[in-house]
Image: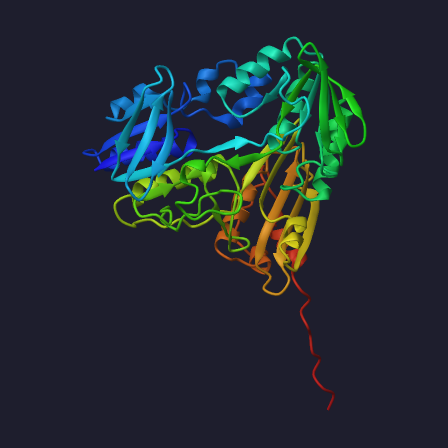
Length: 453
């Protein structure tokens, strides 16, 4: 069996390693256009901020490690075209310029995503950078050394982590986003309001609800960001606007979402026989809505890549879908979420209710008993849990993994009230805070008094 793999980051590495182990007689060729593989891009802010000193730890595989599994890895090779039905591809050696054709019995497409780059005046200037891969992170670190004022455009996870890292390194930081609150895709206002207060308390300037219109500069270097509401002096701009799937190679050959995300079945096969896909190039099955969605996360990618390997020859292990579970640490606050927010549920036309709990996470007689903010969202009609968010200075983020399992299994908020959790004063109260949220959401019991005789 001849297997070709295009792209080797999270999904690609998982697919390749598992395929090599499951099918030791297969011939596996990997095409990677970059000069490195398996970079953990979620660690960029930690690397930029100096928390991670040795970047080698951000790589969890290498061409040599894959070679030990019998895999041929062609670094700095770009696949220029794919004939999915004809089982062949065209590739180019980026070092020599040589172009050649290859064939395959099975194709694994793990081409990932690429940052959204708007067409704005001045965007080609020096010191306007992207934030996606290892080379980007090294450029950011080098440029930031000589920058006093840094502007980050985009208030998602990466943008928030970067502004924190820059501020902690003594920079003057501005965060710009067209939406009027940060992290709007992940958290509801009760959480984002508190986080925004924390950011501004550390001196970070928030420029929300305004859109970047152009960049100006001198001698080819940016010095000002012009938005719909004002202008900001800057020495360096990092674009963190979002990501789009990298799927031009298969356009018109497989089913895709309108944004280009490849649609796969529950066994990771595309609409084209023998062509599989995984990771940020794909849509996922989003359990809270039951629909296909584009949610690029490393956790989705490694699961999907592993499933590709298991299902490459015949369907064996189905994909259970995802809740889009994620977490972030912002200064002293530990934050996590899963599924829909109340706002995103409304956007989906779903009628939901929510219960919000503010409490100490463990008994107040303990030396410390940090407060937590927990919100659980559930469908009004079915009472099925569809999302949750938590924030605390204590690390309670694993509780969101529990809620993710609840959503996965279509559990109701009423069942959450009575799930069996252990009690130990070091960790929680006799009623775990997840139980307490469920109890708070329980409808009243209608009591009928006996008719008088």
